[in-house]
Image 1 (cartoon, helix red, strand yellow):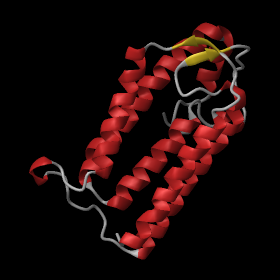
Image 2 (cartoon, helix red, strand yellow; image 1 turned 135 degrees about the vertical axis):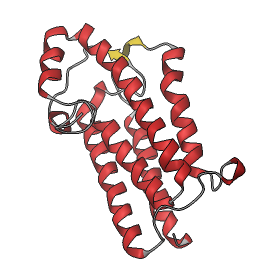
Image 3 (cartoon, helix red, strand yellow; image 1 turned 60 degrees about the vertical axis):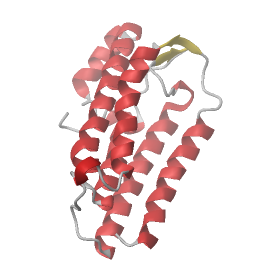
Length: 191
């Protein structure tokens, strides 16, 4: 990939980070918060995946090869996919509104959101972020980021969504169970 093309992907990820920080203000007060151990179970794999994505080479030169040859068409397609993942994640975050939290929690006056992207999947923020990570890994072309990092990101989201679902089943037993029957977790119509 041409070095002049990298900044667009970086800008898209910075937009995500800035939006998340700004949108985190004004959320509802927390009623129940996850433990530090629970949080580490999904944060540590994300940190390792991020390192694998950024690492130009891994120890011993393993998994440092490129997947796709660099080129404008590949870059434009990949940047478009990152932007689509970003848009989907932001749509989901906006739909959650004040119910959002970066940790597994129940907010005061928590509402079960089932509209917008939540009609398609129960965890659309993870869907959007996973699409962003996968497209970035392919664009950067590093096998370590793709072959090792991608499964770590997916595992991290899976661990966190399982915890979230357990909390939602406790807080909204009948409603959430019915929602689970109608809507897939992370990949529309599949998973």
